[in-house]
Image (cartoon, rainbow, N blue to C red; front, side, top):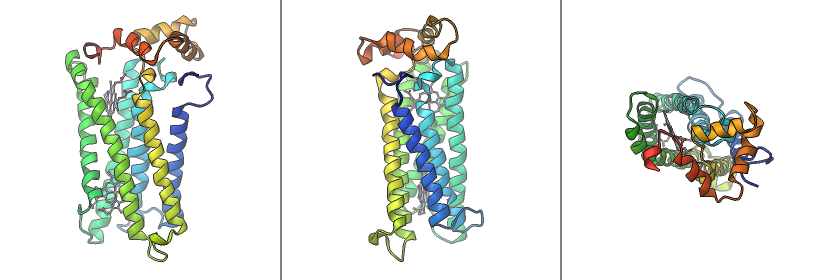
Length: 279
Ligand code: HEM
Ligand code: HEM
């Protein structure tokens, strides 16, 4: 069975969504059950917003934003609608990341802990700055109507590469942060004695890796690429009107007997103005 067929009971996106949501429950249980809870007092409860908001925003929302064009049930929406959803999810993620940065810097300043001394903080801040740049360039290139089509096409491969690079870096930065926090935070028993908190949070790290791996899988598989506007229009009307259920089967019929690249080649030949001259 092909992924993306709505008749399939599970797809990589279902699994990614599952692991993403479970990671949010894990980080919340970590700070609420094992740690000091959440607060805004310059203390450890304020620091705790840092992991919570990066897992929700920088990992879960960014990952969702990246694959949103590739979910077959969104192919009935226009490309412009999908651009707003992709940009909106990334903007929301960025807002949460900014609050998470304020929380950790405020905590450090209140406790007189130096800023920006660790590799985690260097790579983390670099990822946030690149993410901001990606957001601004994405809006200028793909949402502002006057941007020439050939600029869009030329910029697209860089946008995709840097998006996937930033997302992967985010997972790596989170793993470093988790390890640092466990080493700093556990004293009796220590991290090396494997207390329940250490095992629990190590599992959170594993879940984040699996989530990242699934998002990268979905975002790089040619057969999951969104068909062009024209092709999706044909697909949606071939079943007789706006019947959404027919979209997936129509696509899978179309792709039946073709290799993974075939449907992509077909879709790329049609009008997709952000990529046309490029592919
Ligand atoms: C500190 C970014 C995830 C734990 C920092 C700092 C930055 C940062 C820029 C420096 C703050 C300062 O110097 O005042 C990020 C980013 C993340 C992330 C972009 C996104 C994935 C996490 C996670 C944890 C964590 C999931 C787990 C608890 C820490 C700790 C510090 C810290 C313990 C203080 C020690 C240090 O500066 O290295 N983070 N972080 N971080 N972060 Fe993260
Ligand atoms: C595609 C990341 C912001 C427009 C992509 C892809 C990634 C990505 C990884 C490839 C997805 C795929 O091949 O299916 C990001 C990140 C952003 C961001 C991390 C924020 C920091 C934006 C913004 C816009 C935008 C603000 C403006 C509308 C697009 C478009 C595509 C795309 C038009 C092509 C979709 C397609 O292939 O059909 N983005 N993006 N992105 N992004 Fe972004």
